[in-house]
Image 1 (cartoon, rainbow, N blue to C red):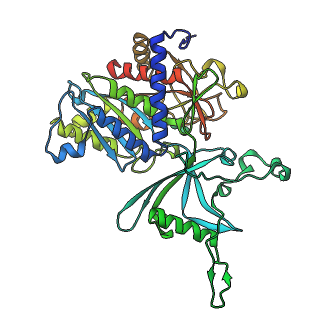
Image 2 (image 1 turned 90 degrees about the horizontal axis):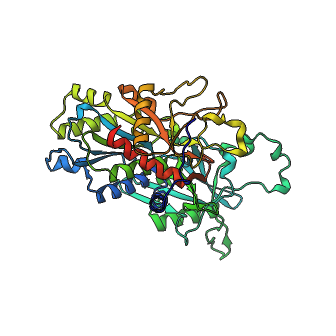
Image 3 (image 1 turned 180 degrees about the vertical axis):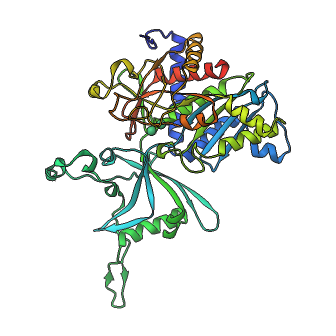
Length: 468
Ligand code: MN
Ligand code: MN
């Protein structure tokens, strides 16, 4: 079967490029630990590369033509970037799609309480997690608080060296005999993922006799005062907040040989970043090139900012309108004739858990970009199943551009499964295949990728934009 070489064949110039891309990727991961932060960083990078907001162009009454670079943001959580081709859009686009939401703990709408002198924020986890992995690690709080008057305050606590961090407690081993008899899925339960945020009571008030009275919920009161002083936030404002609890660490080189990257949220920011980089560094083509970064993949691509939303279709319609190319039929043709790489991470083969994989059809760290013909579970259920002809075309494109790639399934048949956004884009009738980067510890607080695979992903996505 196909052998893919990466590290073994890299020359000095390539090794430098590998490190350069890895450095940019680590910065991207550190700048974007939530979907909102990822959008901000993406817009910053896109504008620096000459992309302009579609709303600005519309307000200025501008039109767009070949070579123009345009982006559109949906609700601060999803973005589509376009580089106009010289051919009419109805001939179809080349689309790179990835998601920028990651598993995490979301703070509930009525979260703050005190129990026995400790103040907690109650959470509801988002996406698939092994709950026991989230205890006793340093956590950070990211997000926004929207007040009734429309002001939105951004919060980020736990990332700066001087910031405090938060945590979820676990039971000490000395008292855990009973806990350790439980099934792993309930060792830590969903309602057990409450985050410790304080332990210092507010100063008590003196009564008439001058005696100090301990206030009820004095620790919670002190936390509320702190939130008020620092963020102008009332307890009720939690009702309209989106606060995400994420691991409080920065992306790091990993391994004695520095061959890997360890970081939170690489599913799927590794594909988001490499797609974005390919888009920003590719010169205009005959076909319109697009990178689409969506939210909510981890919970089924639902909502206004998920792949199932009409955001993308509406944006393409607006763009065609600006290009003087819009008609309902032209829009349908544009979407139906597009080709897409639905880029999402693959499960990296893990020798420590070999029983979960089928070795001939697994993705290996450091063996290049992964193509998944299908995903799904229980007999491919829920999968887009890419057409053979399309895979042939992609193989040809990757081989021509010397992209190391491998093909894989997500684990052994019937061991489990998963899905991506591919089947949703496929609804338009476009050709789409899952591609991406192999990850170890997927969905854990710290995930691991190979720098070689990150590099090959950029090469692969550039090759795709050029001539898939
Ligand atoms: Mn994913
Ligand atoms: Mn995932």
